[in-house]
Amino acid sequence: MSQFLTKRILQMLVALLGVSIVVFALIHLVPGDPVRVALGTRFDQDLYDMLRERSGLDRPFIEQYFAWLGNALTGDLGLSFRNSQPVTSLVLERLPATITLAFAALFVAIVVALPAGIISAVRSGKPLDYAVSAASQVGISMPDFWAGVMYILLFALTLRWLPSSGYVSFLESPIEWLRHLVLPAITIGLISGSVITRFVRSAVLEALNQDYVRTARAKGLSEWRIIRRHVLPNAWIPIVTVVGLQLGFLMGGLVVVEVIFAWPGLGRLALTAVKDRDFTLLQGAVLYIAFMFLTINLIVDLIYVRLDPRVRVS
Image 1 (spheres, helix red, strand yellow):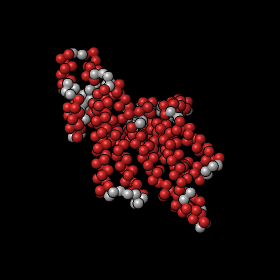
Image 2 (cartoon, rainbow, N blue to C red):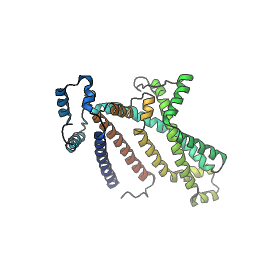
Image 3 (cartoon, one colour):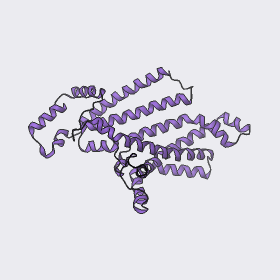
């Protein structure tokens, strides 16, 4: 296990290095001068030259990258061009909101997908299966921005059950925190749940066609006991795979939902950095998102080993 964990961590570090190179290169190809944008109407040539020198933008690209990478290894991701605050503190300030929304959306997705996928597989070829498949297809095809707007119109503006946008800290008011969390979590959770439902159905259906299931049925075991004792334990690995991928996607793919619901997360921070040409802040936000995605993949690999010791870990 230790050899497996060491190997996966090394792979994760190499992937992060690759992400940092690609992001750093692509960001510097984006048109616009972040120092000029930061100065705005206060532009002064001497001040402009001083800020470019202090931020290292007057040096060659390779030198800039290695200087940034060296500081990043110590936890220093530089200063924001826009407000001169440390990027690390700005990212960590937004990180809890993104993690909260991602896990809340994943909870909604799992609550919807597991029973729907299992029932669809057990009732394969019957009307209930067709209904679940149609509903999941609609969910997959539904744009998250349109769904968010529709939920706001129905539950916030028409019924007035929930707030339309904003964020309240859990420590400030647990009830208001939950009320503000419900709509964005449902918006993205139902879409992710539709994806997971298809995978759950496929995994359960494949397990139901195995010889050990036919043997269990021949012994007279009830259908739901067969599913609980024999089918689900053998279907968990593909289900865990898609759940892990969906969580990784949610960590970095909530930009539109965060903007619609004014949710102060990493996605919205990255979008603001793009609009402001705040390259340093954008690099830091993307690096944290990549780190979380790779960490989730590592955890999924460890769960594989726990669920099925036959998985080769060499």
